Image (tube, rainbow, N blue to C red; front, side):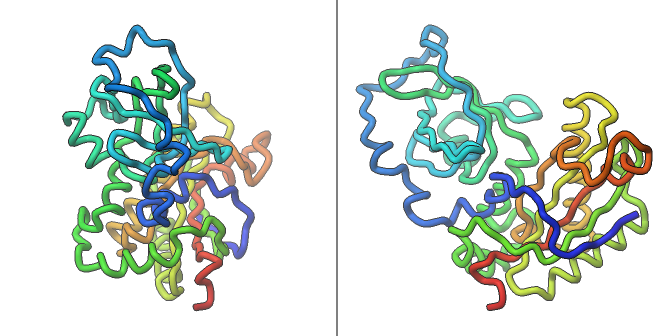
Length: 292
């Protein structure tokens, strides 16, 4: 079961901007002058265990320079962090089988959502552990290279799109399609699949349209279960739209799971819960290019 509505209000998360970060203005590509003025003599120690624990930073990578990165959190704060040889970089599937130099170059991409445990070193912070999700890494890599899913021929179009919306964090929402799920499930019905391809077709004829996919659950179950389930539902929708509906990955903003947040209806009734077990597919156009 699904429905489509025009112009709903949704919360745009920082993860929405993951597609935009790699080609934003040069100030986002390089660490700012204030951050690069931090001077620490020598290299971080090979063993970080003896250093004082610092704050845990959650957000997305908004800039990189050599072994330094900037993480922007949900409140807009920017934190400069050093990536050391001793930094552990974990994905949801376990340790990444890459050395630190190769990982810093190929996997710590602008726009990638991360959770960073830090230690104090000199006047700054060093990452002791960086956690990321495999799906986020895959999406960020596709956006960065424009080739992973076989759309190398679209690289020029990708770059042109990014250059036009790279600094814009406000969008017009042209429509939203909701597909619903059974309790605890992430299975798409035949009707849902048809609606998703119909939504892709609608967005395809809109100039500069992007899709933002957000998964939700009802209040049944605990938070950890619902978070995983909402992410699984969003991922299922993204995969179907890309693989079966022909939607290009470079036009898909990073999907997100919101567990039971932002309910459409009252979770105290079976009918309300049924409405809340959903994935919202939002057709979005940057205000800077809408109508061009």
